[in-house]
Length: 217
Image (cartoon, rainbow, N blue to C red):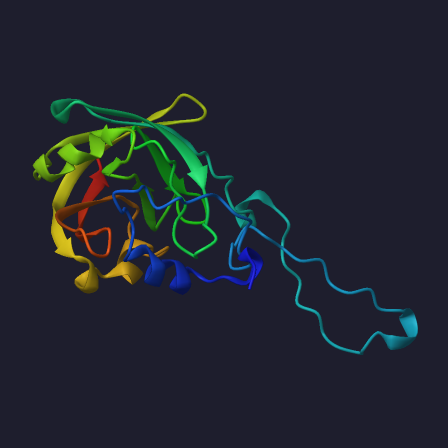
């Protein structure tokens, strides 16, 4: 199976084992076919083959065009001393969300929502630590409380300000991953890293730290 046939459900399942101390060795892959921005061209049909059907007419005006995503490039939580570069990434070879090797950098899931989009979860994640690097800025994410300000800078220089609504540590098996990567509902920011107890035998953290923040009006 290649990245073009992977679904968000497979990403959700594999994300549950995110962030081992070794850094997961995650790398970006291609674009899944469920990306709503991909429009396949219809197959060619000769005049003799054209069926007599009533084709509905749809306006090609701007009101029907999907807005272009503007990627986030920086995430700051000034009260916690978090300041990270953000790069767009997709899926790794193991179907998990790809993350930069260096825990000082974060990843935006580029097939989901983006800052300023009309709906859905904007997912930004990073390793909490990695061999050869030590603890990353996300190690302080557990200190985020409701009302904490998170500033996301996008590629066009704009800043979207969020306020933490809720957050905490959740055992990996109990994380509602479908909600984390949900593309529907009110636009919100979901920041994810690993935390809690580290299982030396499996080489993985047993929990995830998940913070949800809403755009400031």
